[in-house]
Length: 320
Image (cartoon, rainbow, N blue to C red):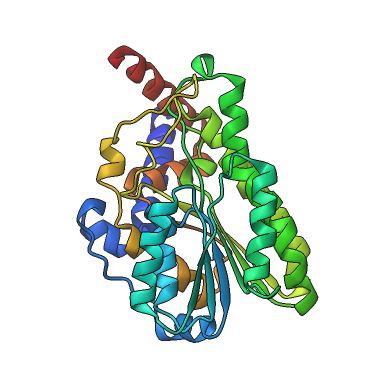
C-alpha cells in the first residue's frame, strides 16, 4: 500500500507537469526553439510613448529584452551593464530597429551598491523623472558547494542579484508612485523557487528576489504600479561562463544545460507579452519538463524532491 501511495505521488505531479508545460516546449527541445515569439499588438500599444530602464542589457536576456522593447514605439530607453563596448553595440542595434526612440547608455557595476544608486539617479534624469518600465535583469550565478563557497561570494551574489535591484528601485519607484503608474519587471530564476546543489549563493539571492517582489506587490498595487517576478529556466546565454566559483574566481565554462537552453529573444517576447498583454504577476518561462516537475513536486511531494536533490549532489560529487 505504501508503495502504491509513493507511485501515485510521483505520477500525479509528473502528469500535471506535462499538462502545465507550454505546448511549444513540449513539442521541441529548448535548444531548437526559433525566435518566433514577437511582441503582440496589445503589448506594443501598452508600451507606446513609454520610457524604460533595463539593467543587464549588454548581453543575454537583458539584451534580448532591450531589443524587443526597441521594436515598440517607445520614447526613451536607458541601457545598463558593465561592458561599455557591448552596450554601445546593443544601442546601435536598437537604433536600427527604432530611430525615433532615444537610447541612452549608462554603465554600472551592480556589485557596487553606491554605484547602483548613482546609476538609478542618472537614469531617472535621462528619462526626465518619468520612468514607466523598470526591468531588473542584471545578475550572475555561482558554481560551488556550500563548504567551498566563501562568505564573500554569498555577499557578492546578494549585491548583484538582489541588493542592487533594491537600491535602484528605491530611487526609481517613488516617481512612479507620484504619477500613479508604472511596471517593475524583476528577473528571478527557477532556482529562486527550487534550491539545487552547488547553487546556495545563487538560490539565496533569487529566493530573496521572489519574497521581495511578493511583498512589494502587496504595497504598490494600490498606487497603480504592477510588480512582476519572472522565473526563467535555462536560457542560452553566458550566465554559466560568468558564474563565480567558491573563491570568487570565474567559472568560465559553458554548461550543456545552458548551451541547450531557450532562445533569449523568444523568452524576452514571451515575458513582455505575459506582463503587458496578460497581466501576469509571478510566472515561469523557458522551463523544461524536469524544472516544471520539480516545482510541482515541491508542493505535492516535497520529501521525494528532497531525496532527488540529495542524490543529484552525491552524483555530482562522484563526478568531480
